[in-house]
Image (cartoon, rainbow, N blue to C red; front, top):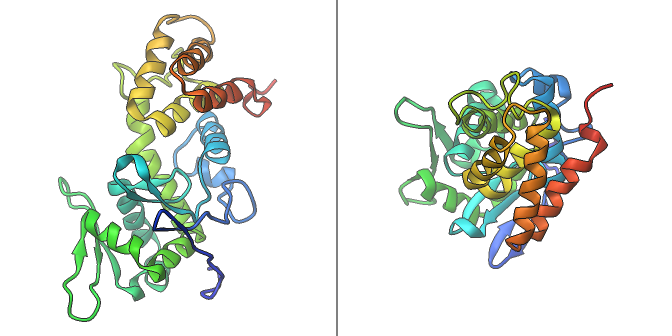
Length: 266
């Protein structure tokens, strides 16, 4: 466990507390490739996810706010928000209850495990005689308290919390993307089987959500059954993004298409 008094330097953006993060997705303080594979990913999935998080995601211990969703608190490498963030905390508490208590529980932060169909729920103890808050409101309360924001940032330095972030991301974001069609899009012979094609898919979800994934898949169907249809879809997607004025996202897609890090092993 990182030292309890490890330094956390918070910033202020638009009146919101933020932590830019200090633990990169690649490095000595991050999960190894073997640990990624231990979450049920194939080698291609792991390479693609690691690339997208390293180049376009955030540090594991980052805390920020999503200006496009009305100001949701975001945490970690994707970064996670809302129910997916709460699910990650619940998984961390389940797998490492002592570490969760040491970092968050002692400050009045708790997570009630999911009881299907009810998802996991976050609870933040009120100060003095104030009642506790739950759910998304609790996330807002957490993000407004410097002590709690710093504690959440420190939690992101814990290996167990990092793996919980990834497990929640895989279960609640990536697997639904991969199985959104009539057949899994990463099945043998499908358009998204290589690390590069999978990185295109994960990047589309990260930057544009399900709408971006749908557009990328539509381009892939134009060359269904042909070799490298996923990569070809990426080229068409990049041009469409550029034409729509999304120059940043288009440049990122071209980076994925050109990077030797995603080349198939020879």
